[in-house]
Amino acid sequence: MSDHTTTNEYPTKAYGATATDSGVVPMDIVRRGLRDNDVLIEISHCGICHSDLHATRNDWGNARYPLVPGHEIAGTVAAVGEAVTQHKVGDRVAVGTTVDSCMSCKSCDADLEQFCLEGSTGAYGGKDRHDGSMTQGGYSQRIVCREEFVLKVPEALSMEHAAPLLCAGITTYSPLRTWKVGPGSKVAVIGLGGLGHMGVKFAAAMGAEVTVISRSEDKRGDAQLLGAHEFLNSSDKGAMKARNGYFDLVLNTIPVRHDVAPFFRLLRLDGVQVLVGVIDMLPEMHSIDFIRRRILTGSGVGGIAETQEMLDFCAEKGVVPEIEMVNMQDVNHAFERMEASDVKYRFVIDMASLAG
Image (cartoon, rainbow, N blue to C red):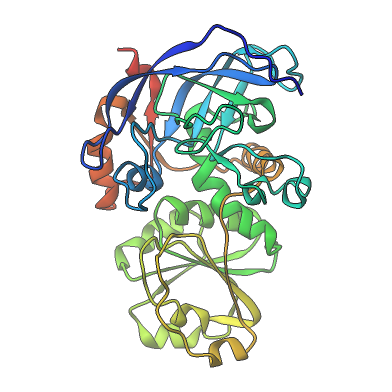
């Protein structure tokens, strides 16, 4: 691969953080000129992920500023590098959490670029593998991305619905596929937020019997509308005990520290609880829960091939996220509402508002 780069850099309007307490504010950034294998994308929509809020506030302690968040990106190809073969101008495309990797280690060879042994490159806050610059995300007019990490959006998916699939979608789709959920599977989804509602939709579309577990009784109606077959109130100790040993897979989407043991006990022999929410340190668990041959594991996003598979699955099955559109200028308010769980179930930025 040639590292030849065109000289025409792309000035770009964006919103990003300048400090831990700045929120996201207007700024100008410059996208690199196209390398031979690069694609220039004009962004039409970008989903808002809870990770964006954490990153801009430096909740994880590794932020560098200025930082433009956004890794649920949908748009149209505006230009391609000289060696690009997978995409052409005018294509409907998307970019997710991973924009580069070594492409040669065991993980990358297995289409698991997110687990690249040399470290994958994130859509924002990452280090470009060629020039060392910090990557900037999708709260912007355009982005330049290596062609292998650009996905195709099927015609049956609208761009605004495609965007959240690049993180909220693949984060829940991947573990269901990894653990072979299908007809006859008994799946519980804990939490009914941005991730949880997609977990319910995917599991139901795969043919599983789906139960939503929540301590909020007012989620019962929403769970049914989203495709769940049952609702289990986690505050009801009797109802929880009655489901001990019942489920093949528990998809845990709770994004804060909590006791996972009660949900562990819901699993059948060799059943698996998959953590997809970032919950900090786990509370202590008794070893007997593991001795009874139950599995506790985690899952992040999927690789590029699996993410494309997910987009195609969504187009075929009509699985789309529940979204609320917001203007770029209103993202700080959307952050506040997201923290208060005041969204059903995913915010998406209409990037046309950035030009206004």
